[in-house]
Amino acid sequence: MKILVINCGSSSLKFQLIDSVTEEALGKGLCERIGIDGSVINFTPAGKDKIVKEIPMPDHNKAIELVIEALTDPATGVVKALSEIDAVGHRIVHGGESFTKSVRIDDEVIRAIEEVSDLAPLHNPANLIGVRACQKAMPGVPMVAVFDTAFHQTMPEEAYLYGLPYSFYEKYKVRRYGFHGTSHAYVSKRAAEIIGKPYESLKTIVCHLGNGASISAVKNGKCIDTSMGLTPLEGLIMGTRSGDIDPAVIEYLNGRDGRDLKDIMNALNKQSGVFGLSGNLSSDFRDLEAGYNKGDAGATRAIMGFAYRVTKYIGSYAAAMDGVDCICFTAGVGENSPLVRSLVLKRLGFLGIRLDEAANDVHGKERTISTPDSAVRVMVVPTNEELAIARDTAALCA
Ligand code: AMP
Image (cartoon, rainbow, N blue to C red; front, side, top):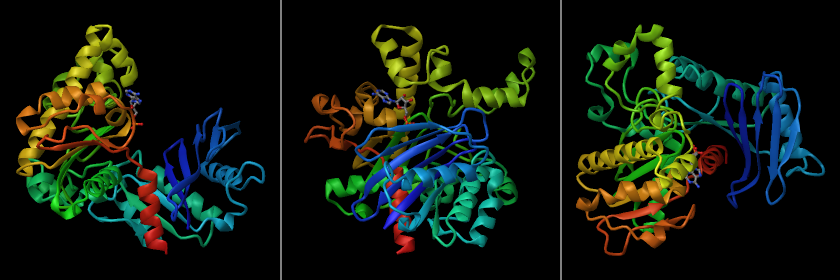
């Protein structure tokens, strides 16, 4: 089957066409600045050069029209006709407690996604705009919703409840949900395949370290804890997000230098993390590593703080699972930064972890980076959220 995978934001739309049999991406691209002046679509057919076109996209319907045009273009497209696309898989950020796995989209599913939109007001409405635009452009083509939160729905109550009045959970559904679930599921399953043991027999910690970053503890094939919470702001120090802080910081800052709640939340989401810690040097680890290697104090502070937080979470998840068989690094930083991996792992000698420095120095490829005598297998497993979405979509539409 040919599956179109859509990841729709408020002003952007990422797409990829995947052959579910060969699991190869036939083409991929991105629409940017939808509804804003200067809209651009780029499309890269597999094995060919990227095509970039500046075309007005007043709304997502126009963006989808252009995506279809790009995919079916007689010269540079990857299918002859729209009818070759068998199904569409949509990334949906928040499924609340309603969705524990991927589902075929119908009116009821759309209503249920709308119902939990309060929990992700920036993301879910944008995701649904993408669903509706595809339904309009491809009537009759089956569509599937794949949720960032679904994999984490197996967490036990002790992990997902905050130490708050229980009524806050009952009335408002305030609890840990977790995100990046598609990636955590894909990577933990792939790790079991590489190790050659049943998924249901392993204790795995997945470190998804990208611009957004989260860690999960996967025990016997089920997520039992994860670092992001009600929103993707909790947990690790991220590119520009603070991760864990004392919630009283918000009250303490309120009114200082004229800041209100909106300003503070904006600072926690967009001006914090390694960007803020580095003294606004950069949120990109390539820049920070360059600074670290030159002895820059801000870059060093940011990288050390980031790595320390990752180490702390790994330690706590090893305790939560009563041991750990395998630790996986994935996403932009996890796959490409030997420095961050080594700073994290050096502190975990007490778990019997031994790093193979030479294997750690290789970039971006699936591999084991611990020595054969390490008590815990440590791996780099590149994530592929689009493929995971395509697999779920194919399974539900076959
Ligand atoms: P992601 O959100 O998974 O796309 O990850 C994006 C982040 O990965 C970037 O902001 C960089 O900080 C980081 N990254 C990408 N390539 C490298 C690299 N070669 N070395 C270090 N960090 C990298």
